[in-house]
Amino acid sequence: MKTLYRIIFLAFLVAVPAAVNAQVLISLLFGEALNSEKIEFGLVGGLNRSYILDIEDAKGKNNFNLGFYFHILMKNSSYLSTGVLVKSNVGATGMPTYPVGDEDFDAVYQNGTLTKKISCFYVPILFHQRFNNRWYIEAGPQLGLIHKPMDIFEVEDFGGDLSYKREVKDEYKHIDAGLLGGIGYKFRKETKSMSAGINYYFGLVNVSEMPDVTIKNSYVNFYVKIPIGVGKSKE
Image (cartoon, rainbow, N blue to C red; front, top):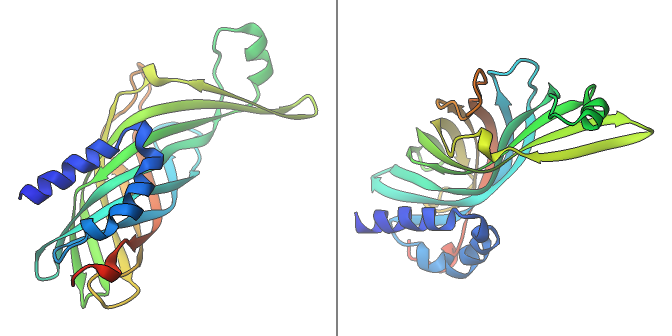
């Protein structure tokens, strides 16, 4: 239990903006130490297609994810799967723009499109069940820390493309939360090996602070997991 507490503490410790680059370095340097007989540690990365289902005209947005994971053996082929997506964005695109109170700006972007880019640190806490040490399913809650939401105004005009980013931190709550579930496949039958999978996140929390605006994040995620330091760790 003390090991689990230390892992969760490490996950939240890394989940700060200044640690984004350090996270990869820590993984490469200490992967061997973090792997043990009952713990698998590694990097996870992939692409997600995010949505805001509560906003009319919102279209899916493609994003890149990067983070680290822990698989903690509980019993037989059952694991606790956790970690942190250190670089992870959600949101949507294709929405109409809104006036910001500047006549010149509003005139330029009134016929443009709006993209909501919501940067989050996500921490999944999943039950992970393996079958014949190849296929696996996992499901559970996921918490997110919103740290840098942006509204991006774009328009094709004046013979080119114009873009403007507006930070909208005051328009969002700090915490996102929802349910995550998916399926994956291990490339080798060894206990610790590369794997790939797909999962779906369904946000349960309205993260908007604006009246009459509901924003619940969701995404479909395709990922690859790469264990670090496994070659020298004890199986």
